[in-house]
Length: 249
Length: 249
DNA sequence: ACACACCGTTCCAATAATTGGAATGGTGTT
DNA sequence: AACACCATTCCAATTATTGGAACGGTGTGT
Image (cartoon, rainbow over all chains, first blue to last red; front, side, top):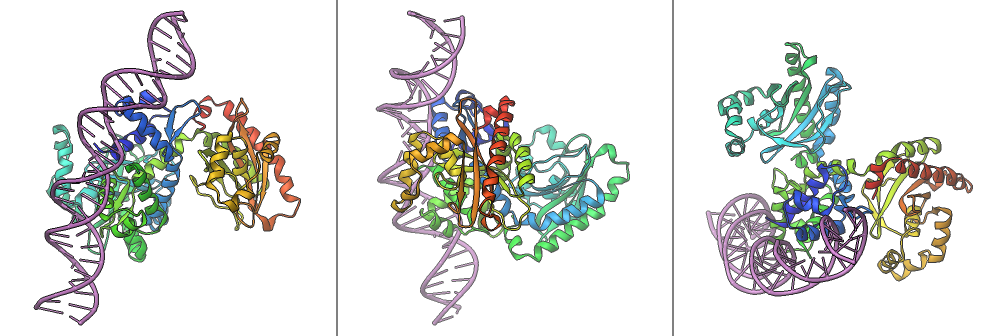
């Protein structure tokens, strides 16, 4: 296991608990000897990726603030998609999410919240496995079979049964969108549409999602057209913006 | 030079240019052999810290979005300071900045922009050397002499002459604030006040800054009291918030 | 159509960094 | 005062990292 992997683990760990951690706690969490963890943390601290609190404890570093900002600027897709997403939100009064595939995961790169009290929250950069949830299905539907195989492997026997078949995915690819009703999380309904490039490859998925409680049976149906339309608009906007297209994934 | 340092260099480089980069370009920028750079990039890509664009080029990765968000949550000081900073901005109609010291640098951890067209921009996580600029002076004034020595070493002969003497810094420490007029950047005027903990150690510096063009001679003077007051409020808020205090640096 | 140039990728022995058990020093507790 | 706990330092064994060289693919110029 390489140093980078360990470092990433440490940072992830420091980020997911709240409050700073003691050396011992970090070492245990990443299951590494204390001495190794110590060196790692010290070096990360020098780089500003980890911060030493006044009392000697470790917390996630401020340089990651900067890197987060840099990453933000760079996902050019965001810039062109956000206004269109906002439009969709304003018309439908539900949250809108933009996700891309990265390996066998999907990553949220932009979100526009509905004003609703009960709303889906997916912070930027959140990763979750492909195959489940409306956007997870759409992104998978447009991936090659290698990705499908990998996703399959990562699932348990139980989960594998709920995974859509290649045949079902083909249907979704043909129509360009997918709906999910509580498949991602109980009580969450969503429609997700594919943002395609000129060659018909997928760039991202736009998702309109809201609490099931607010959704009479036919409401989800009314989501489909606006979402697909927004996906088309984003695709068009990307095409109109050479730089954004280059950076899109 | 360790792997982590190189990795950080690569990420920093990918972040500071706009648009994705070719392997060769990255290798040259960080002055490493192509083969080494290649391995590094491939591993970083697996970790999601770097993204491979469709055309094979490399860009800063989406996982950094997530890490940025995590870092955000963790700087507890932000949470207590932001409302107070906003108040100061609204009263003075100029931008407000919160910086902490990290080694021999200061890092911006929160900012509230004035609505003004011409305004200082310091993205979150920006690092700049201590000793110059109002907040750089305040943060230095409260640091021990080891930090002073380090800062001194990093300066050129030329710059060293403009560095405040320990004696001058003591004065600033006594009154708790510093002003700078174009010392950081030409045309930028600012007043910065120290946020102190119970023991009188510095936690952060609050800075009120604006374009010199908008500042008649005595206007900077009117900045002092409100800024110092805001610093006191933040200090009080931190004390009232045990968690924030723990995480403060 | 061919050769050349360029770029990314793979390979592997030499190298240099990482490793982690054990010893050390410091702090707070019983 | 003795103990327990934690961070820190040390160093020989180990392991990952290194980078020059060779390879294969793509596009450019002749």
